[in-house]
Image (cartoon, rainbow over all chains, first blue to last red; front, side, top):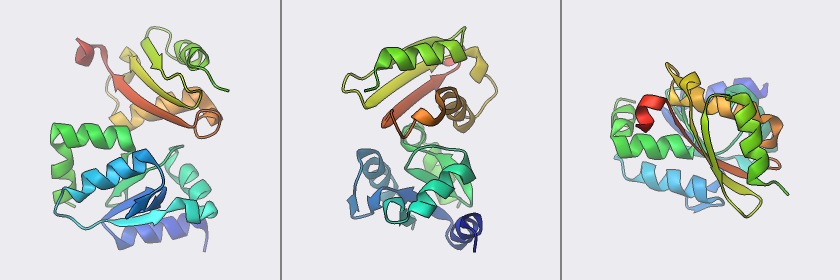
Length: 102
Length: 77
C-alpha cells in the first residue's frame, strides 16, 4: 500500500485524527502537547498517530497535505491546521463547531 | 544557525507590501506575524501555506519551529 493510500485509510477510519510528535499521553513537542490539551477539553474522541515512530508517514504526510510541520489536525479527512490555527479556532469558538459536527 | 533577520528578509521579498515582524532569538524557534493584503479571501490554512512556501524547505529543517500569525489588513486594525 502506498503512503497516500495508508493516510487515506487512516483519515477514513476516524473522524478526528491528530498526527503528532510523541504519544497522546507523552507528547514530545510543546506544539503537539498544546493541541492534545485543547482537544481533550472537548467531549469528542480523537485518534493520534506518532509520526516520530514512522518516518515514511512523517515524510509522506507533509507531501500529502502540502504542510511542512507537525502537529496536523484532520477532521473528516480535511486538514484543519497546525498548532497556531487550532489555538485560534479554539479561542474563537469555531473549533467546538468543527469538532462536534464531525 | 538561523536568525530572525534572514526569515524577515525572505518574507519581505515574498510579501513586498506586507507588514512583517519576526521574533525569536534562540536560533531555532521563531514567531512570524504577517499582515498582508495578499491573504484577502484565503482561509487560514491557505495563508499559512503561502508563508511556508515563501520559506521553502527551511521550515522543519533550519527553522525548527515557526509559529505564525497571519492577518489581512482589516483584521489588524
